[in-house]
Amino acid sequence: MGSFDFITFFFLIAAVVIFLQLRSVLGRRTGSERPPFDPYSPRDVAQGPEAKDNGKVVQLPRRETAEDESRYAAIETVAKAGTPLNAQLRAMTDADPNFNPAEFLNGAKMAYEMIVMAFADGDRKTLKGLLSREVYEGFEAAIAEREAKGEVVKSTFVGIDKADIVHAEIKDAEENITVRIISQLISATYDKQGKLVDGDADSVAEVNDLWTFARDIRSRDPNWKLIATESEN
Image (cartoon, rainbow, N blue to C red; front, side, top):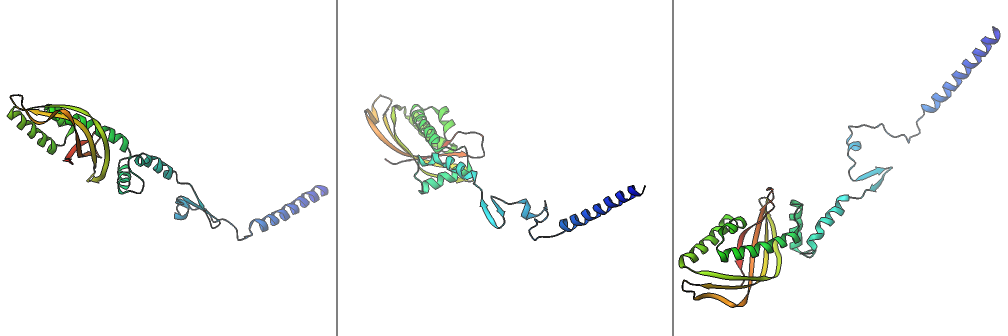
């Protein structure tokens, strides 16, 4: 019984000593402790693109920069970097991520040919789908006057030599792009008796136009409409 009491007393003393040693170590501050994490502290919630550690700033790569450059790459094919037009197209791309200047130009050239030929043929239905209300009214009035005189237009679209975007802007959520188009066209107008009154049926004429197309950014309709025309001949 005495031996048992001695052994029990020995382990009790050892446990007390170990506890006191641990307490002295665990309770000591060295000055390098990290502050407790506060999930509601602005310092801990939003570190942004930079992370700080021991006073050093670690710059993290911005993925959007690469994405922006990739998105803007298509603009460089139609407008040189650093030019006002390039800046205009970049602003348009920012407002409408689906906008692609090269694709727009292809569509504008197709629309140009369709409109020119529809006007010559008096095709009001086609024109109505491609023109704004104001421009359509002007085209329709010209067609009606021609018909009233009994005149007939015979045209052959030879092709487009060049098409360039010269201006781009956004007005009240509407994208406006002006394109300079140089085309080759054979056109002749005849009166009731079949007499030539305008143009030349045997020669190709160069036509220089400034056409402005528009599209509402908020609309799901991807199509553009012609809102203004100007001849540079």
